[in-house]
Image (cartoon, rainbow, N blue to C red; front, top):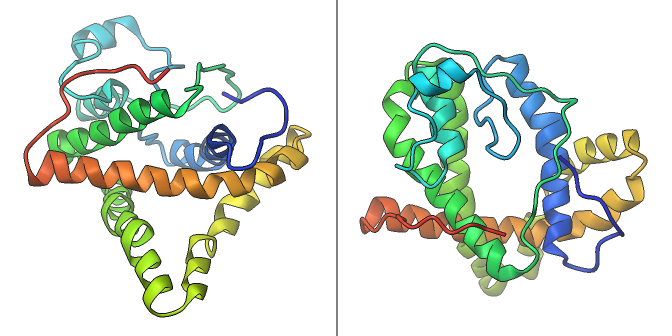
Length: 228
């Protein structure tokens, strides 16, 4: 699953998504697969054994992230999910902020909905439990830091606190550069890295809104709006 085309323009959120994909599909997901527990069998490029899919009830509409729901349901039934790193897929990505916002809203609400629905069964599995804990930390604590704490510290204490937005960027940049080198796209990776930062902040905003709506005020997202 990769982007094709010209190098990104400044602050192109699509270029930020390119970095997300490089990191996730060449580093993060292979590690999950090595441990035998990919957390999401991505809905846009997955294959299933028909009899198991039917037995699980197919793709449920009870959450806004049916692929995550199905993956965790299969784990709960004792089945295995694997990640095929060499598989290729060309997704239709959002081409403007209007559609991107719909996608991010659906993904963030879907994550929170699935955590609320599956957390009991996940707690009995050591690795998924750890991934879920990290995911919730990132969804709440890290998002609060990105959206509120860092700007306030930069405004009230010292502007150098803004450096916090990029202090851990090498953790993403190194795997992305390695993957880019294999694809002959090092220049594209370097040009895209700055675009990853605003997308990361935007992800945090949508995740905080989802946590607030789903867990605090009880206003779940019930309408599925396609993000492209």
